[in-house]
Image (cartoon, rainbow, N blue to C red; front, side, top):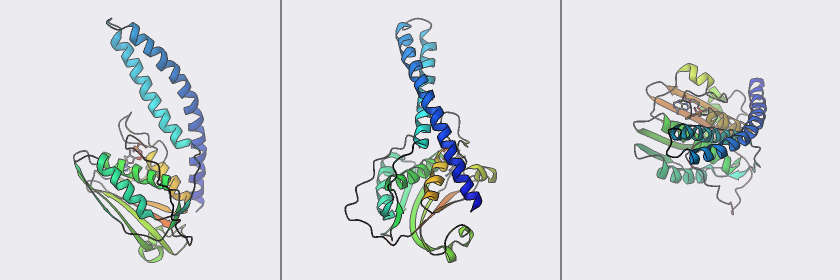
Length: 259
Ligand code: ADP
């Protein structure tokens, strides 16, 4: 539990630091982007045009990255409420079907579940981040499976009981048949900014964000992965006694362009 708390604190201070740097950097990049656009215009038809375009493109990439950092660091207003995970899974699955690509077969099985205390937008972000990783791990196709269940942490998941209150949890599993992760990658996977993806494609914030959200909701997240076979991410969220309100507003739409 000590290590767990330290990790959350480290994540938070890192987030604050990253957010501050990203904010200042974003302002500088706006200036660079602005002037680069002038140069691109003035240089049209000259040998300098291609160079100017390179500057503009790099500045745009930088700006995209700082936006992702800001999203990670932002202290969003989080509104945990009693939530049926299956409704969020169903909504995210519909969105994924449209956006994940035809080379990936998506199976989602879920039925109404006892409520957990969570922010629907955050839970959606967790599922999207995991789906993006699964997609990236299956460049030439495969299966993405999402399922949910009620489990007894004591009986079904003794390995993750450390740090968890005994009792019943809602389990969400996201599995892929992708590349899998070697041991050293699993060990670092939740660290902010750890990525094995080519520069410009990964921020290393996807799983750090998942970890932060799930832990804040009192749950745990575990990676099971076999190189060459695939990866299963298991999330356990504690069940709440409170009832799901009837007029739950739909969570904000998400997209697959990043974390
Ligand atoms: P990013 O996706 O930006 O690299 P993440 O924190 O989401 O950042 O993931 C960190 C690293 O963990 C990835 O770069 C990848 O090496 C590994 N990883 C995460 N999910 C999977 C997965 N489903 N299959 C294989 N590797 C994964």
